[in-house]
Image (cartoon, rainbow, N blue to C red):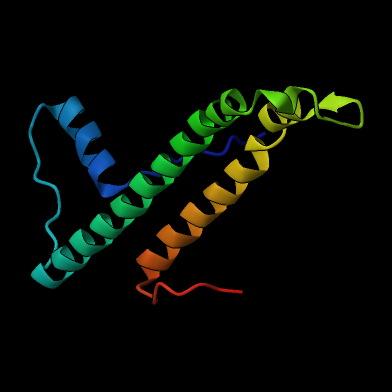
Length: 122
């Protein structure tokens, strides 16, 4: 029985770091052309904006639900299928919202990497 050899798949930076650890020699990472560097910076800034917005919306959701429930205590008396609406808001509402937020963030990041326009798809 022949064993297949395992192969490590890594980025050039990871390979350089691993080689540096083995040999002790510091190797320079590959440099980008000026036009590629500028595009990489634009993509990074755009993705950072989307990420900060996504984290802000996440914080608003996670902090906002308890604040709304505190502001409207009568929601404890309102029941849907025998369960208080406040419990449903805390137990069920965040998860679909988190999935939609994650999907939006991923699509925004991918659209930014492709360099496409920032328009909404239906």
